[in-house]
Image (cartoon, rainbow, N blue to C red; front, top):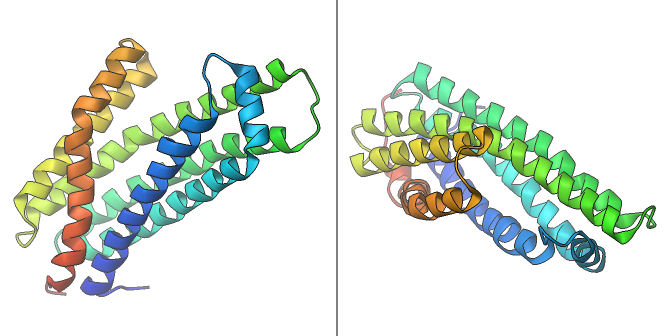
Length: 230
């Protein structure tokens, strides 16, 4: 299905903002409220007693998955007149990333299964299995975010090539792409301590957020009124 420039801009912009809200809820609230890294028993009790909250987080992750697909498709449509080959490649990288995210979500749904069934082992062991499943999800998601960084590099390049998009967004997206690559390659390679990576995420978080959310707002406020030749 082909989208007009206006439809593509609105679809991508709204999806990006919905995704940001869902991610803030799932990662910033649900995960931080329920998982206790050094307390498997406490983690089990939190999730077992807070199963509706945990499941609301799964709903948020499902929304993230679906909006990621929408963003990849809409941005391809939006930038196709600028550079069809680069736009297609950038979209496919995000589609692959979204597939990896979906594979990772399998581990979170495993946690739901552990919490829902009668206790089959000790609380400590059940909690350990939950934490292990969460860690497997985060490891796989982190690997996917390397591809997401590559996607942002392509998107930043497209913004710079599109004369009607403010260049600041192109540069911010390029910085965000490099940041994702640096942070998640360090995680995958085990380079640096956890505190170093956490500090790095805090330092680089601002340009990452400004690049992605700023571009989303521009798409809604100005991008929908920008037309490219067919």
